[in-house]
View 1 (cartoon, rainbow, N blue to C red):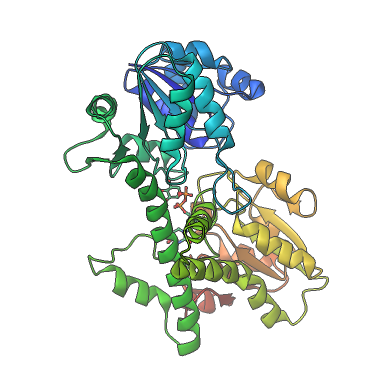
View 2 (tube, rainbow, N blue to C red):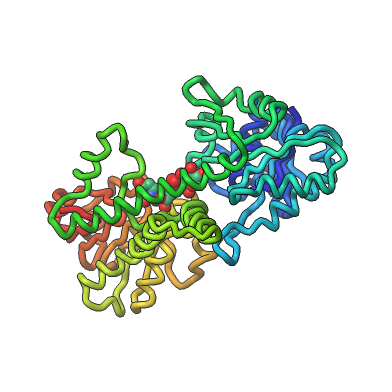
Length: 432
Ligand code: UDX
């Protein structure tokens, strides 16, 4: 099939590459000429394991190309994906100006029956708006489909190539058939394509992310409760997860959820409810808990040290989660801003996110090329992102480098008993 993808952000780039890899002819379009030039040269603007290799392979085999020219890319395509950004608007709901502008350009450029797919996470009712725009400007037949993307950064290729499910909101059999053919290589019987109407598909994405965020805030509350009653959240987590109705994933307490999806989507859903005269109380509490959680490590440090003025702290992990360089809504920023505001100095290490972190934090902290360097003379270490390379460090070396062997573990990656034996003052979340 001939496919055009409008927008080469995370979602567009991964989708385009994976569709090309299953044999389709894909053109990725972006208005950012610098980004397109970079992609044409085989450099990718984001860090995502395996993506660069897959882009190179498919570009070399001429199934994947990049351009700033939207019209010719659309004219030759049977399916056009709109995967442009949906930043937070004033009310908290997603701002649709880029989606609707793209839709209008797509509508003018279509030259044959085209399936236009909303791939960006968009508020309920967006497919209808896109349909209106297309109806106004298009001279050919078309269908609008909502096909939300569920990929996780750091595991994006795997999630796309082996999805748990593919959600397709479509109002015509013709569109369902095209989408079914396109996704056939990625689904097996146990990983179904779920066909539904466009509004249900749009809401599914928000509901899934809000549910996952709810699990995280719930566990962060449980961790706080564990500390008060003298229980260990890690036992509680395992005891809960063993129940098949609950399951193990997304039950890890932490420094609060971040990233480009959860904070934005929860907020957008709350705003949607409000617009309809409905208070989504549960989700407001999820947000409140998350705000509190992002401040927790600094509060623990204040409690332990009294004052942080003039102290030096090491931070391990800056990205909002491992295997990505994404700093969007990263809890590390809140932790570091908190420490700096209390007069402390910070030295931080992240395996890949230094470049992106500099854009947010600038030169107000020191960045180190190896994790141990950040520990030199440190009053304490804050573990903020659970990169694998932090899981089994040389603890004796750490102790020798630090001024005092204190660890605030925002991801519970170490065993409290072992840390005590090794002579550390160790503070995790909700641990005994
Ligand atoms: C998420 C959804 O998982 C994905 O389906 C959707 O398409 C986009 O949003 P992503 O933002 O890449 O993906 O990150 P995810 O792995 O879901 O983690 C989100 C946040 O939750 C991170 O800050 C992570 O550290 C935190 N988290 C996750 C926890 O604090 N505890 C957990 O148990 C799991």
